[in-house]
Image (cartoon, rainbow, N blue to C red):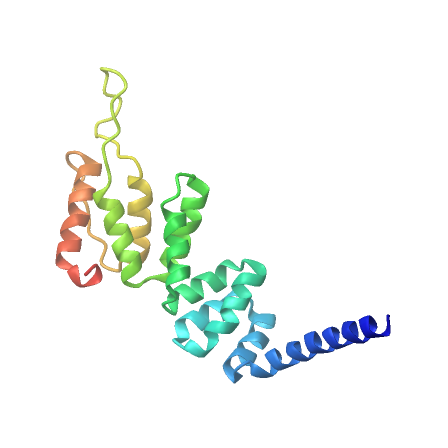
Length: 189
């Protein structure tokens, strides 16, 4: 009985001791970030992703796993952590509109080539919606997902191409953006 109590106390002390050592192992940058999160919240986490400071990755991973913190997921993706980039891309490919929209919001915040590549891929996958009757209620074909793609492209591109208002609006938009990507291949290669 005494041996069991002694072992239990020993296990508790080891557990508490390892908690302190993990706290001590936090880098100065992680300690500063921890303090900033308390006052600035998500802005501090997103700034950590923009910082390029790889020493923050262990702390951000803990934050992401402990709270399923979407901001930590974005920061880790910005720092190049493939697991978190892939999680966001899975959300973007979801058939669930809400999950897909949240994934696109995250992807836009990540930015960079991964964002442009995905939006380019989505642009190339646009297909016209089939007409359900003989009467054309619209003066242009509608495309599944086109609104999403154009909305997010407009958010990440500074020199947004202007569409000709004559003819088929969606087809013009698609062709315009494809031409834009042809002139900006460095963003997707």
